[in-house]
Length: 107
Length: 118
Image (cartoon, rainbow over all chains, first blue to last red; front, top):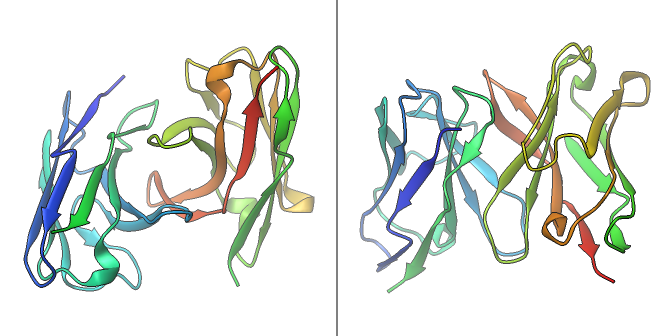
């Protein structure tokens, strides 16, 4: 099983600033990496797939990068609605696995 | 509106069974791989099971293998999860989700809560 490790566990950032979240895979997942956003009481929402392709309707301030085992999600200028928990997920191997999440909170 | 609606959750004693359902609408369910993903209270996401459009490929997480069974009825646009021999650690919010683009979960339901307690 591929273990996905996200860092940091909690990230405190002020609105308008840039946030960078990291995700590491225990072995290569090529570019088969997705990012999801989850707000309290809601289902996860797909943000990024293929490591860097934004899903339909996702604002351009969200960008993804990386390949192999190291990935990043960058939010260029944080809006109030961006404060949430973010998960990475690999879909290169079975079982599909998620990172433990990064809680992006308002500073 | 594209939608997945789960049902069937509830309170169940350890060792008992429960069957979850997921009703799909407004997308091509019959062509879509479908999954169950769960989230224990206050914790992260765990993939549980997958079934391809024609039930030709089915897979489970090790934690549920031999106890859970995924199935679908394309004529009814419905996905199911039969959960037997439930354990405390199965307590979670269970989401059904559609995958596309090789495995990303692009459509999610709102989840149904399974509580395992004596």
